[in-house]
Length: 276
Image (cartoon, rainbow, N blue to C red):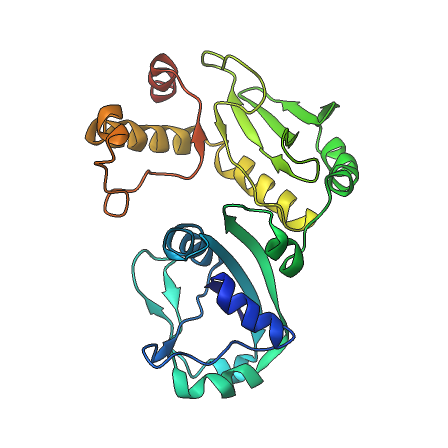
């Protein structure tokens, strides 16, 4: 079984000390070890909880495989949404659990600030910008994208897909991957860099980066999905107007923003999407 676990820097350092072969013992106040069943759930915890509450504001997602026959003794528990599924492993059984990990523990994503410091480069795969460009060029070309500088564009009847690699003005080693989608039937954005909707993908492996971009393109190129998410965001804005957000009065834990995807929409563009 493939499992995931969100961790902070201290736990990651202990995992690394083991040669990425096992998780460290639980502390006295931690009677349960909680691996989770989906990358989405682990990413949510690492990018929100770990980043917010850890001293260094860093969060990581680990991935590992456990022997199927052994792990079936632990019943999955749903603790929130349908994808919030986790196993409850008693702390005294963690050593035995570790012995049934197949291969090594991989770190597949990192979140927080600074997102690309020495810890990240040491513990997770980190593809160089030039290597990523060489990797995606033939793949995006085969999918119908046309390249201009570090931006690949594919135009279809209803959508324009953009895969954009942006260098950092502050550090030559850093760069950003920001895929975006333009909706062709509504007012354009003022600039073509990102799109009406775009995301910022963590820099890990070239395969993982492209997988996340393709998943984003697939999910956000549905008119019904766009209307659902824009409608949810409009309602969220009504509950949390700009003045309330600026004054720090919004409780993002009890009323989170509907999606991590970034919107670049005028009020008129929002209305146009809802009428599609």
